[in-house]
Amino acid sequence: MLALTATAVSFAYPESSPLVPEHEGDDSAWSWLYLGVAIGAFVAYLAGLFLLGRAGGVTKRRAVIALACAIQLLPLAGPVLLSTDAYTYWDYGRIAAVHDGNPYVDVPSDYPDDPAYPLMGSHWRDTTSVYGPGFTLASEAHAAAVGESPDAAAWTYKGLAAAAMIALVLLAARLSRQPAFAAAFVGWNPLLAVHFAGGGHNDAWMMVFVLGALALAAAGRGTLAGVSWALAIAIKWVPILFLPLRFLEARRTGRQVDHRGLAVGACVLVAIATWLYGLAWIRAAGPLATNLAEDRAWYAIPSRIAALGISEGAVALAFAIAFVLAYLWLLREAWRGRARLALTAGLLLVATSWLVPWYAVWAVPLAAVEEDRTARWLALALSAYLLRDAVPL
Image 1: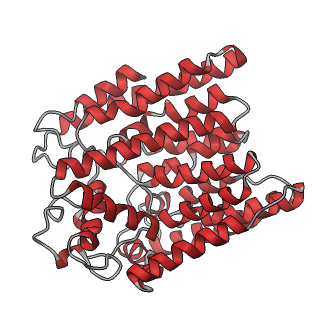
Image 2: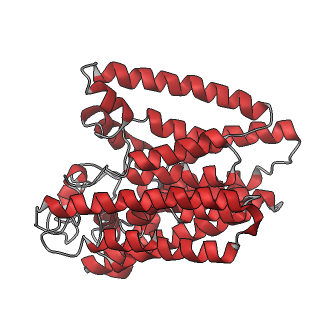
C-alpha cells in the first residue's frame, strides 16, 4: 500500500502531468498510470483489511498505526494534487485578511490582482464563501501568516489536512473496540491520503471535531463534547444531521447529555461571526445551492443516473426524498438506542448532487468506529467508486 501510494504520487512530478492543476501539461498517460496504481493501492487496502479482520487481537496496534501515519503523510512529498481548493481557501482568507473585505459578501473576482486569484478554481471566482465562519476565521489567520507565497499557502493546508488525518486515525483507534482495524480502515485508505495530504481539503478538520466530540462524550466530558460539535458545524454544516441521532440515542440509553457546551460554543461562534461578517455568513450555503442547481458534479450518483436520459431535476428530487425517508428511519433507529452516524453519512453521499472524492471522509472514520457492517461496506464502495473522480482523463 505504501509503495503503490508513493508510486501514484510520483506521477504528478513531471511538468507534462495533468495531475497537478498548476502544470500546463496535458499528457493523459500520467493520469492513466496514476489511476491504475491508485486502484492497485486500493485493492491492497482491501486485502489488508481482510487480513486484519482474520488476525483479530493478534495484530500489533502500533505497527498498524505507524503504517497508517506513513500512508497519510506520504503525499506531502508531492505537489498539490487533483484540486485547486487549497488556493480557493487562500483567496477567501485573503479577502478578509488582506483586502479588508467580507468573504460572505465579496467575491474573489472583486480582487483579480490577488496572487491567489489565478490559482483558485475558476468555478468559485464569482461565488462568495460556502464555508462556515469557523473555517473562514482560520483561513484569515492562514492568509495573514503565509503572506503572498502560493507554495506556503498550499503546503500549510496540505500539512494541516495530513495532521487531521493522523488525528482521525488515532481517534478511530481510541473509540473502537477493534483499535487496530479501525486505525487501518481510516489510515490505510489511499483515496483519503491522496486528497488530504495531497490536496489539503478542509473536510478532515470537520471530522476531527466530530470524532473528538464522540471521544469526549465517551470519556464523560459532555461540555467539551458540545463545544467540539459546535466547532465541527462551524466548518461545514454536515454534522447538524448527526446531532438529532445522538440526542435520541442518549435519551433511549439513559446517557446524560450536557447541552451547555454546544449552546455556549454556538453562541460564541455566532457572536464572533456576526461581529466580523454581519449576518451574511448565515447565507453561506446559498452559493453552493446555486452551483448545485447550475452545475452538478459528474460523479454524483443522481447525475450519473440522469445521464441515462432521465430528467436531472426529477432524479435529484427522487434522491432527496429517498434520503429524507431514510433519515426518518435512522431517527427511529436512534430512538431504539442506535445512532447510525456512519450510515447517515454514507446515504447522504449517495443522495447528494454535489459529490467529490474527499467527501468520503464524512463516512469512513465513522464507519471505522461503529460496528455497522452495512455502513462499512457502503463507505468502502464509495471510496472505490470515487477513485476515478477528479482524475483528468
